[in-house]
Length: 226
Length: 226
Image (cartoon, rainbow over all chains, first blue to last red; front, side, top):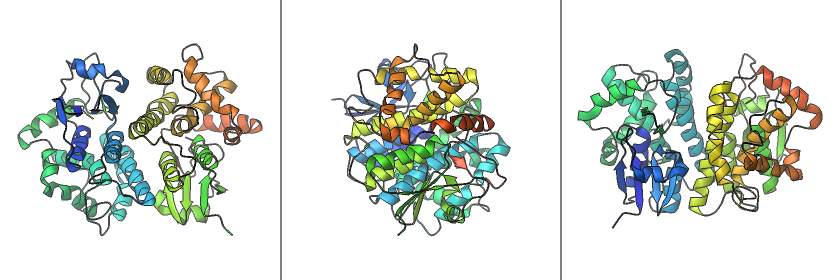
């Protein structure tokens, strides 16, 4: 029998792994379908509402796109293991910081180096917010920590290429925070396996400079990683 | 006695009016504080967590930024007149389309004309979604309609300058949808008054090309409208 939750994605994208991590943390069974960007599956094309983008999640035939939007859905539709705080103000802060990481930091890091560094200075705000905390909302991994997995991927890229954006001496707390989830098996399951990391770096370099957040599976076969 | 909800903003921004509209629709009493961008109030600067941006909402001394994040807070903290659908999938669609309007459309319209037009083509998706609907989620104004007030402002700008992006012949349903809230007094209260529209156009032209969504009250006195 087909599973009720389907996730369409590509192996090389942190945005898709972010959705997988949420599914695993909440214990939701799902079927993962790897897409070939140059030869999209008829199943994916069928859900045209979502502009042929990945990640695409389908629950009981209802399609949805955008990793953080999907995240909210999962946390609302499955009540166990909540990943967002219950308190309205704490939720708001989580939403604010996830948006902040998404827009200011992860996009900033991908821009021209000089401009990027200016935006990275905003990390100071996050550094202050994280002081004395285990995870963003307390003792358990949650929404903001999962949203920040994009930073973990850039960190992983820096480890391989030597071009580090988040230097340990400038942002020791953020560095510690980013690496903390690495102690969890479930997080490691949602990272690029060691043997594929060199391929990933090469693929990423090919598409560097692309501003799109999620991945458009374009007809002319362009591959967008981030 | 000071009201418990304070909103800091500037008159010329649709993002601030979006928050005001939500407050009015939910019947939440608030105090509005108009900021002078070249001479920020000590009260605003005091809430440094929010990066000195407007809109800034303060509830019981807790500050928060980003218009759609604030919107979510208001709808959660005040249960009356809910503006987001209760059903998890309908909520997800509302989140998706608000993000879509925010990122793809309102930013797209502000970009270089040619690139903008490509993104505006995505309006076709929204046009289809709105077929046969009064407001986005049914008979009452809600989250997506409020998020789309940015489009209403561009529409209003087009009416004055003659440079229309959303042409009625191409997107009749969207045009009808955008104008529908104009029949509501509360929406008109949250628009630029007629006598100030020419000033607003001139101010907007001065800051055209700025990619920032909310407004940074920068030390060097640069004014960002959108």
